[in-house]
Length: 264
Ligand SMILES: NC(=O)c1ccc[n+]([C@@H]2O[C@H](COP(=O)([O-])OP(=O)(O)OC[C@H]3O[C@@H](n4cnc5c(N)ncnc54)[C@H](OP(=O)(O)O)[C@@H]3O)[C@@H](O)[C@H]2O)c1
Image (spheres, rainbow, N blue to C red):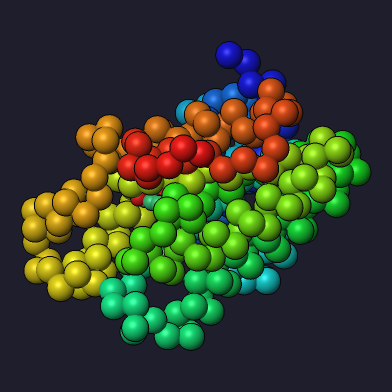
């Protein structure tokens, strides 16, 4: 299927690893010209070089923290007029005992998972409206819809994000600018791997891979029977970035192997 995005300018904020990188690859494969961001420079530059070489498209790496105003400005300067904007972050850490969650932890969660994406979108929506086209995709989390006691630093901020995008997407769809969100479940990514020691501490487990994985599987009953790869969601992200998705507005697409039990 031709996604009709050849030559379009795309930003993948958070594009050096995990689901962001997989999405960047699907966009590059479809012919988009890319700007990808991340905080860690070496992995970012390597990802940009690899994607550019593999798909023969231009990929510009910009070191930028989406949760900081200077990071968002650096991105805006590097790419002021994208057609496509996809945004993600590293999964926030599991919180352990909810009574030990501090105001400082809440502030970090809100800065990273709510204000960062909103401010990046706010930088780009006016230009997209003027040009009559835009596709925005937030890669957030299924715990926005499926509250989990150990994901308090991830779910509540994203519940607010999807509330925001539900309203804003309906305001701007008339200009050809669509916002949709993907809500992933459990994916075996670099970010998820980095969290495993914190997961162990949150549940008082010994730092033993087998012990942690057994607890994780017990704690997450996934009907599909496996943890996903980043490529299990990237094709959906690429479709939502395409002109083909012009009638998909303000939706939250859960990709979780059936873990979240709900009708909608
Ligand atoms: N993996 C899972 O099981 C899972 C489950 C539910 C939801 N999710 C959600 O899915 C999204 C992607 O997760 P993932 O597992 O693919 O993560 P990942 O493997 O850590 O990849 C995240 C990417 O975003 C970059 N990034 C992180 N924080 C950033 C920031 N503040 N500014 C700019 N770039 C940033 C990372 O690079 P740097 O770290 O170098 O910045 C990396 O390129 C997250 O929103 C996560 O909460 C993941």
